[in-house]
Length: 629
Image (cartoon, rainbow, N blue to C red; front, side, top):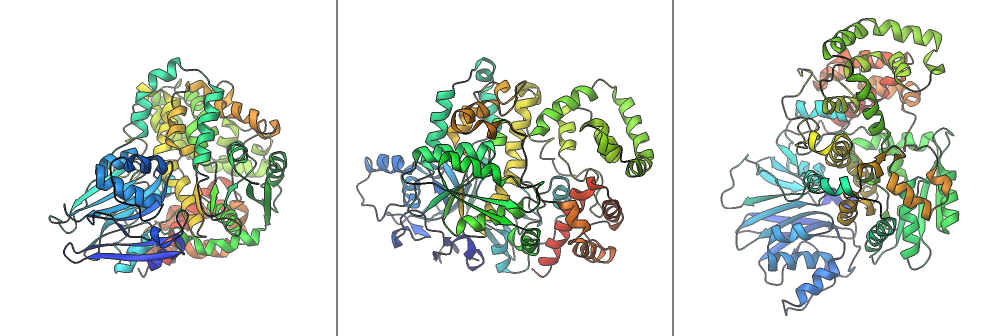
């Protein structure tokens, strides 16, 4: 199992086994702190009672170590954060310790005296942890490919496949494999090793949730105000904590607000010149490297920009099903992997701006959802249902007419262009009975499941509709940010960054996900995140103090790739082979009829189908890669 995770830890590895418990741990190490053998894992506590396998970093662990020094006399074997976490478990217990940790982590610990296994994830869920029964064994691992080392994997879960096609990823706690679960953010699992029931998975317990934080800070948000100096201090401290390392540290710099703010604060805190990394694209419509160059010059960083071609990006596509060993269809995984590859040539750790949009309200879809729902709810639901049915009936004619006339190309971005280009999407969104369902539909890729044997809705709870967040109490703006923190950020953004970077043995740290930063953000009035002045208002105001103004005062751009052009061009044979009726019937996951309809619409020039086709192709490519395991 550990050998299959060599990319996550190329520096060291080990195995610990206990015959009495019939349980063990293995570990692959990417050495960041205490590069000596004193940081070797799995690690056993000084008292001999506990064993741990730990993935991640604990920020501010030095304070925990100093506190332990006042309560114990045993000498330390080294100076790693792993040893501090382990000895905290020995002194204070697993649950109390995990609730105090600030960092990114997935932890497995065994108490040999109480004969218990514990698993835990950090508050944001940045580091992955799969667990469940496979081949008659209860197992857990950072990636599913390690579980496949035990023997034949459980079959594909069709409901998980349907969720993947709707959202682009399989949301926790489910995985694409039946009976294998993912540990949700801010949760832990306890297993009594003496009363294990084969096939019975323990249920995760939440020790921290964004919903509880949002509810607790609701009153503060109503009466809060901006504190620019306080914000800079909190975020600056988070950046400084992430510079603690015994190996080279750099930063991703896209030229956008989030990464630019992180780099600016890093320059202030670092000793020596900061290294920053970006990639440029041959396609001028995608390339933002000149913005990154300008920020790097203003900050005085040692900047590396690597220009990549379509061929460079297309070369990554065949490796994606192995790199992301669950089906995953956020196409920005490709440039994320390439910038990680560039950074790894120079550093072992990189800071990034991930989490800024979810914590401070940066997605344009927030504003569009609020505006769209205000317009839609004026129309009675029965009339919306009738309009949706009519739009579905005439939708093909509208699309044909638009291709002939090119009217949408001459229309301003908005409802008219959306209706001309994708009337079926409008028809799927219009019948929303309430705002939560409306938001769910706006972020969905496949509105109606093409999974064979699946209906329009899954039998399982939906990650957005059944999030447990109180929309009425939070208000729509706070609700959207909280639900994205729980779902999209955890299942998409952090998965993308973790797998794309760890495939290159690069550790990525995210200051915006520091607990103190998240707490600060949730005391800000909603207007300072999603307000009349725009999006990410408080963060934009801070950015104006730190970086050139043109970085702040320009349209936001994603880390995208030209999917439609690829799928109609160099990836067309790959796509048509994967999504042919024969291949789809062979795997038995997708219904060929709706998938082929989407493919034909894309080939006819209907770009709105690109995300659906890419999701279906990603799922089928994954099935092809893992069919024998």
